[in-house]
Image (cartoon, rainbow, N blue to C red; front, top):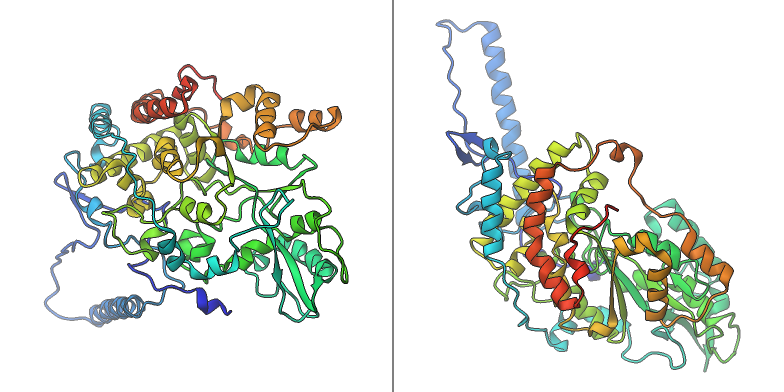
Length: 528
């Protein structure tokens, strides 16, 4: 199957990079659209000089060039060409930004404490949690992703903890099985891993009745979120366990981004990564589960207790691609979520969620992903602007709709929505049971790694470890900590922390209620 088989037409215009804030001009305290025309008058001399004519020609040439660029861009959009275009908001979601609500954004009042407090009060007054999400039928999911469901079987190999199966290999055994894998083109490090897989590929083919088969596997468990909550540290420690294997790199982001053709939001849509490319990432672990199989051997697994993990911290929350690939039939909410597809394919999967005080998470997220001119004051302004955009969305839509509103998410200069953990968790609980989802706190992990790692081992049904291995896992230094340059910026402003605390409180309260654990209120937590 060629890469073109995976290209879908866009349902809306491409979306803008989520890190870019909307540009507004301010005139007489009223927001003006960027495309407003500013009229500039000047008095011309009575006689045209040569210099004047030359300037006029340059002006007309410039305007002509702008017109040509506009026509070219319009032709790309009208013909549906999505490669190379920036991802801009879908027209369906644009209304929420046009009507910012009673607290319209005003650059002159970004630092106005009273104003922002009113915005937060308006948001919290609209918070309500509904659990009546309509779970899509299996038939609808299959129609949406027919190829994925044709590749992954309904039943897996017995006696193997991981969801694995044998897939007939119909390619030429002398050719490169990874030559079309888009992950293999991603970086030099990945190409090195794939080179090793190429060298050992043929010895792992299983011959049965004159046909060749290869073992394929999906993850036994997923670390699904959240970003800047310690998922990298958890991943690095779990990798030290002898019975745990991961993908060739930590975050494939296949479920949320790569299968839609998103690599970086600023680059537009690329070719969609087919499910085969994703499955290739588990080949190294599959080889270890299978063992060395040659000729007409039985093909049975020699290490059936090995489990495979996947650790994309976007899996829990990132459904931003939905509006470009799914018809809007749910009043601004995605008809399909990531967990719907995972559940349809492997209903017994397990998930680990690492959470952190959402106020501190947001500041850490800002420091990590910010490019330049970072400061506590800049963070405060970005928080204020994001709150007003979110409040504007709530004038037309529900909390859940705004959390999944792609345009609002892309427009907010800081990712407020990622810290609304309960909204995502409630949606995951519509298809998976509480027993399948382990929710941890970074604060607990930082203060007692041995305790949290034992909880993880028990959750994954991993066997006992030697004292030496357990010590290595629990005592190794923390991973992905704050960079020295970011530490020098100091903490956020007290006023910013107070505002964010008020904003996240009702969501934390619901989270603590659902999990029956008041520690998720994040009251009087030590700083991590």
